[in-house]
Every structure is written in structure tokens, then in C-alpha cells.
Picture 1 (tube, rainbow, N blue to C red):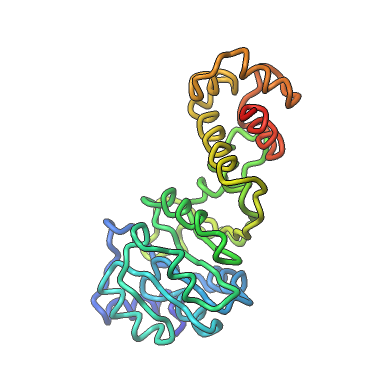
Picture 2: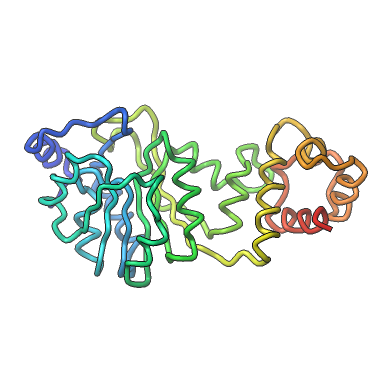
Length: 275
């Protein structure tokens, strides 16, 4: 069923008495090029978990090319519609933020993929939840607000770079799939969207070091206008002498800003601080 066609989608929604819920942040994709790009980005995955399938614009074609697909949907109206648009998908009424995502992924054949048009109002928590499950899938293809995607992709030296950039770039190889303008949704949101592809990579180090690493990164960006040293002194409750010594050991300037550090420098700084 070609629900990416605006006319077909409108008629389908009308048939099931569905209207977009503002409370659930629903905006339905209606772009053939975006659907094709997302579907291609998941090519080769035998098992797929989709979060928030809506009426099934993505669910229908993706379920056709995969061996098994589990779709997590909170809206009961959508679940009824999905029986018609995506009969090959197994739809479960679940809250994505509450569900045991790892357990669901383990039900799927490998290689596994995750796909979602992330609701704007829970984008941050949902990305974190998906990232935490990265050992159990091969690729995640996520659509989000364009500004969020820009922050995630931001390179060292870019003022858009923040703790989310470092956190995700440490764990994934991230690439652009496609930009999706607001006009390609029904109803159109107030912002444009971007689809990113996340391929998990190995983050070396024991769990205790990784947890300290993420703490250092988060605290370093607590007040972006402050220097790295000032943020770490305040956040880690260490003396300025200790913090500045660690920064110097990494070869950084005393007044360096957190958005200027590379991934390798973050790891080296965490190592110096943990000593």
C-alpha cells in the first residue's frame, strides 16, 4: 500500500477515522523519496523494530523486505489501521519509553535494525534509549528535527557541538540519509526533519570508565559559555590544579571550550582525570 502518496494517505486516514494527535506529536510522512531512502538504509536487515509506526507509511514497505518486524505503537486507532496497511508486521501496543527494547530486539532474527520517525517531544529520551540498546542491533535509522540532527553531526570546533554530539559519535558511525522538508508531512510540522543512520561501533574500556566518560562529557557542557576547566571544577568538585593538570596532559589550552575537543581528546581527558 503506497501510503506515501498524499491522496492515498488522506483517504486511508479518513477510512479509519484517524486524525493526527497533537498530544502524541503525530505528523505522517508522505514522501516517496524519503520512504525509499529509509527503506534502502535498512536493506539487509532480517529483523526490524519500528517505534511509532503510525498508519504504516514506513511499516508497509519495510515489513515486505524483512523476515520479521515488530512495531511498537501507543495509539489504538493506529493499531487497527496497521492490520490493513501492514499485515506482515507484528504490532504491539507499547510505550516506547517504558518497554524493554533489548528484550524485543532479542526476539528478532539477525542482522537487526531499528527505525523511527521520532516524536519531537520525546526525541532526546528515545535516542538515549535506542543508544543504550546498541549492542543488539546493526543499524538504526532515525528521523528527527533538523536542528537536533545538526547538533548530533556537529564536528569539533562547531558551536552546535554538545554533549549529545560527543555521546553519540563515540558510540556510532553516523551518516546523513535524507533531509525531509515540513511539506512532506501530513499535517506539516513547523520545522524540517532529517533522517540519520547510526551504525554501532565498539567503545573500548570497561563499563566504569565509560560511565565516567559520559559524566565528564555531560558536566563539561553544563554551561557551554564557560571554559572546559570551569565546568569540570564545578561539576566534578575537583581542585582547579587537578583539572588544569589533566587538561595540560592532553595538550589542550587552558581556556579551551568543550565544543573544540575531538573524540580522542575526550577519551584522553577522561583517562587523565580518572587517574
